[in-house]
Image (cartoon, rainbow, N blue to C red; front, top):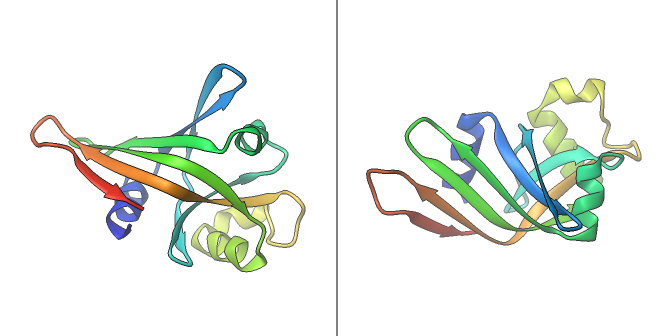
Length: 130
């Protein structure tokens, strides 16, 4: 799990894919955190991405570091614990201007039943179960 976290953290930006009915939706994200032994992302509950994940928690993220790319596929599960939100916001203090662990908007979600695949053109893919 640490390898997946470090890969995504170093990339800075990754792309999150969800579904909206029968339409795929992809957007850039930048928040990634390890908390309580799980890989987390953060968003706002008022955003379409949150609504899409609540309707269908299956999601995939992808990032590229210049030589390798990663895909993480699984379910994103909402965690309403204040401690999880605080931990995320401590990792990204600039978000505190928009989000608070106590507001009704901040949402953190963790991957469940996830598999990461790290690939390149030079080597066979590596698979990591989260």
